[in-house]
Length: 400
Image 1 (cartoon, helix red, strand yellow):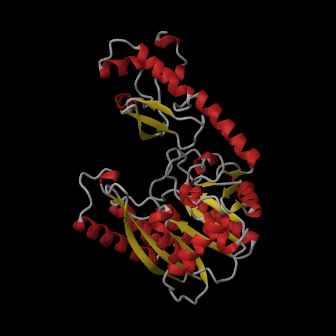
Image 2 (cartoon, rainbow, N blue to C red):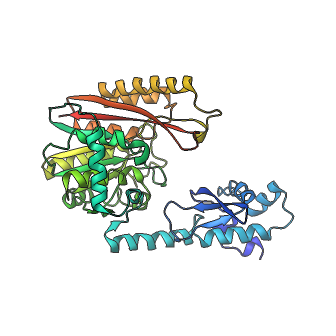
Image 3 (cartoon, one colour):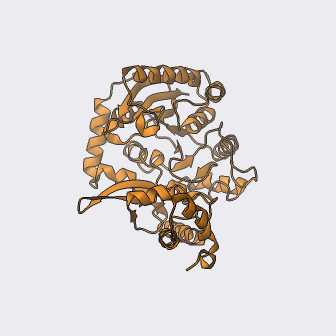
């Protein structure tokens, strides 16, 4: 088959976002191409050299140009590769779009996102509640007596992050049950560059978390489909999912508004009105909440700096680098405590050198909760199992 007979989207292949996963078979190393959206339900596996070739699949080069770049005498292996990638939905084009539409239909029929990240807690609700309660008991009592409008909560996996989760959630464990919880997360895996809101629920090992239908209806009435068109980005988004069991454990079946908030300093790729910026989303949600009434608890699901080789830095994180990270974090947290606008401006001026991914979530929580003050409860840095990446997080309370 010549490239001229290939479908048009395969002649200049554009790879979707995938995550390489090392696999071993018969003492040979392979890479699994993990699709965060799991569109095909299967993982394509390639030899490591093929992954280097995939970096050239950016939609700008033709197959002929790619062949010349890698010095391949025959184009057929490349054609076979792109055809297989397309079959798995890993290339942009009609196949991927059809699989996305199918996925949306399945989620709509189910009425909720499946329990993904939260499965790390196990399947036994009694054991899960016992573990959450144990972590809460181990957390130091911050002795905050004022009404609480919101929390800043880590979204690290529980093995590293549970002390921070517990420190945050303990402050509201004995308080009044809110009428709803608004979870504000970040977009770690998806493609949408605007704000995204879920109009379906979420499953966790503790059951189904319902959405706040009234707020969702008001958002849809005022914005159309702008907030919902990139719904699939929420499928793998752990910054939302990791908060759910804590909310269920403390507040039962309280309805939730789950949203991904972009960095207000980043801007949208296209100024075509198809999506909402962070500022536009905050304004629309504030109006919807005011019209709906009731008491809202805001959760900024946020981690801070990312340092080390896992995030593109040339060397491992030593004692000096850890100190530099903490100094920057505490400076930015001080700006945040002083006010959201000041925080955003400072982060813009400094060009976010420590790769904070939760600027949008933090900003939205502050602007929506309108706290009279913000209190830092805990701060920690966590290293991964391989010791090549360090992520910092904080537990904070937004006082009403």
